Length: 416
Image 1 (spheres, helix red, strand yellow):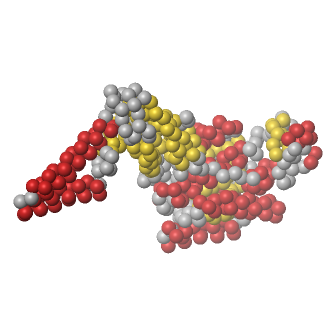
Image 2: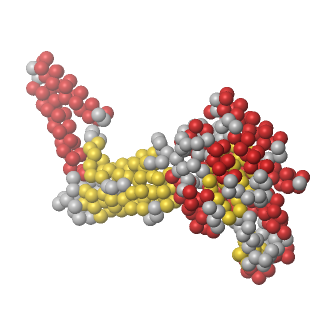
């Protein structure tokens, strides 16, 4: 009940009792006027949305999380009379991550008979997932603002928000690789491969591979890039076990892990690695190493809708992957690091010639004492064995953690 409705109903009641106590006809008249205004506003609020039709349209149905999404709202007056300016209430709900939703409210101009009005509003999807944009519902109001009457509503439109991705510099990509793949990245020679493309010069590139014609044309130093062989690959082992993750929503350890995985897939693909993405709950086809933009697109779409699972321990998944892993594989493990015994599975991978790197991502304030102890044991054991490890406690620290992991990998290669 709005404030104005309370005022008019209260006024009608007060005037009625004043008239009753004092036998004053004027008070009865004022009470009736208040009630008449209430009744008139009630019917005007109904009339405001009768005969209107609302629809919503999206220019695209797939967008990266954090980007602006324009939503076009079309309002049509199918009635026989003009309609006052209506209010549109639009809900945007995430079907993948619970409690992630937005509510927008905006006004549209008044419409004459048969007229069509359009408006575009922008919303920002803060996190990945399958979103439903809509329904958009018309809200009828009166001139005094007593009533908010729900009117016709549109259908919902599905929108897929891909995971947030941060850029990984070329030097970090190189230093994350195993020794053999890193040597190829450092050498920057053909190695029997074919011309791959042209990109901007980055630290570590030799001047002999500068493409001088393109450099002169663009005014920026550009270098040639060649395919460096197909025998080496990289894998991202992603811990999706529900019991291992802490927190809920945007700042949970699960979302931090997914952002890391989504950022590393294109980083390794850019280094001409065949990339596999492994995790319970992800499509099995992603476990086969792939190349190119299609591989990144499949990985992003899968990560956009993946849910934590209650299946086998992550250590068991790693042990299963070791049966197919070959020496020379670069395997980046992304986990909160709270599972007991996980270090044994990773050290077993190291003993089989797999170049293991470990990213531990979890908000420390959400960990229990036992989880914190398991995480500390994992990090200590891996570092003692010479395995590069980096930790991130929030989304803001993810990119820094990848840089630290790359630096640790470089130190290990240099020591070797």
